[in-house]
Image (tube, rainbow, N blue to C red; front, side):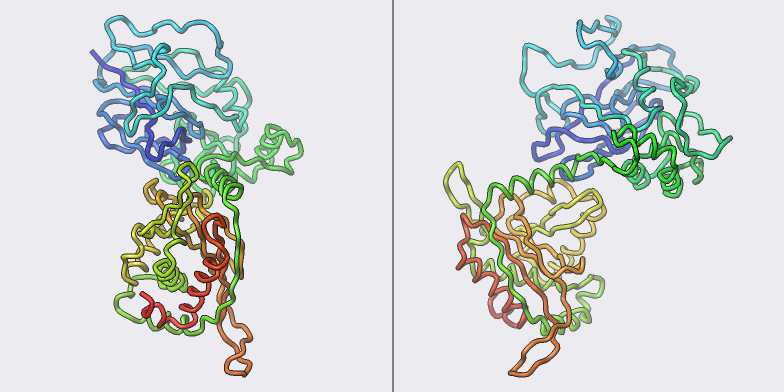
Length: 486
């Protein structure tokens, strides 16, 4: 006797309520083990890999790639007692489609002697228990518009219920309700089962998702028929695909593009709007001669403690900001409107703004004020690399107290940075460049940059903001002050 279990989307932290399915690592019929990675999801803060909670055989994928799913909703069915040679068949509900009837009760489909998956009880509206945390109230998934004609036809023709195969079966032929929009060369055929799961690495899947290309329609040219970046880019340039995409997006001419706002970008947009219209922002600027800091930077790079660490001017700017926090603790605080209190943090979780592929994220270095300069350099490098690779965890992104952003890497002198929600200040470090400067009454060429400090004017008045910015500038003009003031 077999037992079919449904794995519900867990709350992976920070009270998140939904996530997008980025890429499945398994397909129906695959054998899985406990803790084997089965799917990548994108939450509002990061891309997270989810492991299987059971040993067994994948019976059905209950959510499609690109679909938004609420926490607590089943995303995969696994037969925990399945083996390749059994012959029973166990019917389970298939995911509802746009064409399914909305009214009427759903009959019980499993036989009386077989356990059924847990179903939400209408008379008990509380939260559902999930793998991590407690989840949210039961609700249905939210489907996004299909990007291609074959995908629309497949969704429309999906039956309301389907049986889970409990033994080997021949591949299901691809849907032919509508002529496919193929990016493959004429006469080539897609591998069997490609409609269910095309072979492609996660970065290729992300590229295809960003460009609106369906992997199921591509004939891969990589090893074992896998889809490569070149395959996706060629498909994105196909005029037929562009034309269909333009019609579906409502533009008609293909001169406009609509990009879904979800995951990290959705969270970033909401956070910036909340911050900008909640905290009264003030930004001050200071141009600083950093010639001595750049000289110290070159000397530090030659030290053996920094042999395998990338040392940049941001390291000295971060250390100067940490020293300024010690001198002016109120700059490292937050506003508690409900309690009508200012919460001063006597620890520093230094946020580092990172321009990742999926949008702006601000992971933070925990207890950065307790680190040595080599330790801070290693943490800066590790956190930046992790963020750019899309591997920052919810824990990395939570709990920041003050932030620094390096706009100089984009060739920008200054900006008016927006505060991270819950923080009182953010420092922007501009590009370092040769600048005419008066030294001892004589005109000279010096290396200079512009510092921009935005702060919450409910907490930080002009005098305090100016003092913090002046202190950071003084330490970058003469790095010895960093040692003297800490």
